[in-house]
Image (cartoon, rainbow, N blue to C red):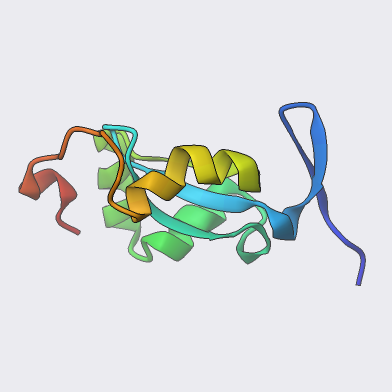
Length: 97
């Protein structure tokens, strides 16, 4: 099977070594999957949030999906999952899925 490659920040990387991340409007990471779990941000968002109406609501609220290198993931998303980030908590109704 051929290896899919992506360019992030001028660097060419195997897709499987990257991570799709769902960020909230407060820039905190709420979901993550390996890069080869999806071929684009829409597919990754569908993996994180299966129902269309929920994805539409999240998009309206400012959620977005980004593809990060491992290094970027450690810096931008890792602290959110390890509960060491400094992002301002969102109100409960905005976070509810």
